Image (tube, rainbow, N blue to C red):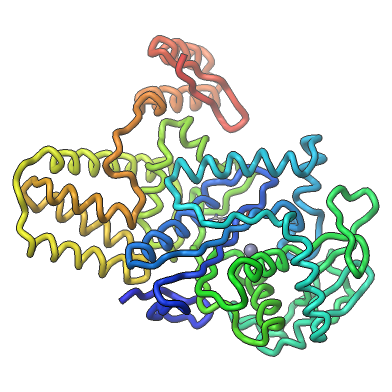
Length: 459
Ligand code: AMP
Ligand code: ZN
């Protein structure tokens, strides 16, 4: 029996799909105004685990993941500028060029992480007519009102507003300075925002020229592809209080019933115990890790060793330990591959059951990895064990049988020299720094200084 934790009911529930053997699932995807960092990647690794475990249980999946290429403002609420418009000014490119560039890198990263990509990838700018229809539907049902800067959803007309994040409509705190004070309630949110003449991304609508609100994008794309009843919606925990609360209000107000059965959220990846931030210089991307000698799969293994619902603190020491663990695991698996012994069926079945029980207990992948380690260590080397691990890997996506491509990974020894050099530079010890540069060069690598520290490349 597959059990999943539903954030809407705050309970682990037995998963029952609406249609037999079929799961309809929506995942909040990236806003492609910049590089997605390793925290974002944790959200997609969680989605990957969920998709793989559902498939392991025999389900077919109809999945949707959006790419937000318009409408996400600098605040998750309704203030600030559109992130795509800002990026367009920053890089002197059209928002469409920006979206294409960062979405390209994003999908390359997903491939490196061996993420099972959803069947439908929807770009928000391609669904604006459906968003307008959605808002028209809400307007007809009396859930909207108009003020100077847009069309808003009236949360007081939707009595269960706040259920997901236990938000109380009577406890609103102080309005934020940048908030539009003409709103009927501070939690009301924009469905359609009017934009100034010089805005690049804008569309005609029955209400005037403007842009869709960020929340309506996911609701409209979900409805278009999955209909008005589907099984699971996923996203990071930061989206629970506003974005997902607002999605639920729009969806259920229009449909007149609950649209999404289960809401699932991954917890945050922290860096050095805190939030990643540009000012601290600790916003890492997958390619930053690669430059320091780690592979995407090292990072995936690092993430999978902590349950998705727990906070995970990223440090390079932690990643190093995971990288070693991952390599040792693969070495052990290889020893089984080359053994000719057989393992009896009862033993294989016991481990199969332990593994399934773990992944079906709300995706307890850390426990499932423990089952694999125990089996590999305690059983005589046998190709049956090897084959079973490969079957288990379908639920993990860790490429456990794939040879390391050493040439793409910077050896740890070189990274250690580079780290020493970084310290020397910080201490203004340029003699040591130059000596270390030469040493790195003698090993066939070139080191270049950068804002974040350094980059290493093979000469
Ligand atoms: P965004 O592009 O900001 O909409 O984020 C894409 C996905 O990454 C969303 O599901 C977020 O909830 C998730 N996310 C953002 N930061 C983190 C983090 N530090 N750890 C885990 N997930 C995150
Ligand atoms: Zn979304």
